Amino acid sequence: MAPDTVSLRYFLVLAQELNFTRAAARIGIAQPALSARMRRLEAELGTALLVRNTRSVVLTTAGAALAESAPPALAALDRAWDTAQSAAAGELGTLRIGYSLSAGAETAPALVDRLIRGNSGLEVGAVPMATPEISPAVADGRIDAGITRGEQPGRGVRRFLLRRERVGVQLAQHHPLAEHPEIEIADAAAYPLRLPDRAANPVIHDQLSALFRDTRPHPRFHTPAVSFDMSQRDLRDGVTLAPAGEAAVTAQPAGLTWRPLRGAPSLTIHLVLPREQSPLHRRIRAVAKTLAHELHWLPD
Image 1 (tube, rainbow, N blue to C red):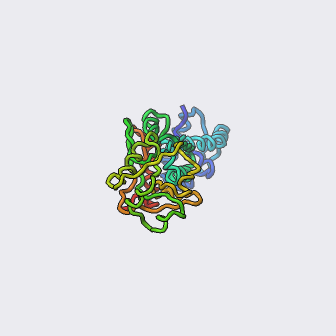
Image 2 (cartoon, rainbow, N blue to C red; image 1 turned 45 degrees about the vertical axis):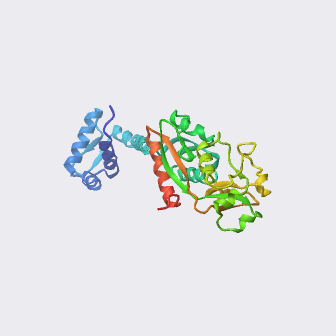
Image 3 (cartoon, rainbow, N blue to C red; image 1 turned 45 degrees about the horizontal axis):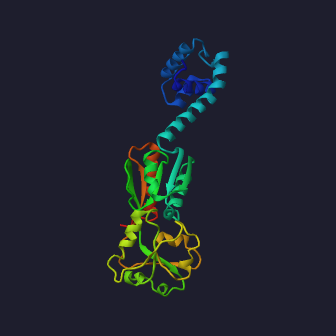
């Protein structure tokens, strides 16, 4: 059985000083206690490590060998201890984050960047996913965390509010309504409104369409032919308006702008974690909470 590491560390100090008085003072213990430690260490090893006399201490062959081989062994043990502590703190491992496309403009990149910069032992992979798939994927362990717009339904997960953002519309820069700093809901409803396919995100689809429930005449809703239309030609041409959260400003395509809708309720973005959480999940939660505070994602 290997000796206790405290006695071994004391021995290394003594091997450097070759003097019990100086070594005990350096360690911060009484000289008799150091002598007792060394006798116990020698008994455990079954061999003498030191030759003592009234004036000096000399290492035996076994003592010299231990003084040479012990430091790298203790360093390796320290690294193993640090690794275990990092894992227990959620600072080590592989993290898989799924995010909805609408959260990819600003929220997901900011969280991923903060996780990577703050945890050198953490490998983070982020992948866009269809919103309805994120909560089930977190629940069954296919991904470790998710970022979704709206409080998506799903069992076996916990949701934490990560961000609130104002609701507005994306529109062409040359559109007549772009001249206003804020747009009335009724004024926006006079134009065809571009909404994502409900199958892609029923929560947000219903929340955005509900903004215009009381307007008369009822607005015309336009759904793109593909779930993520990169061309956005109808928007650029000024044919439609697209209800969207304020985060759309950070990834604004050329020719488009964003204006808030007066009196519209905010949209929410949530962090989705498993109901049973590991240290890694708790680490994600802590980092996300700090980030939301620093970037004012959750105003008072």
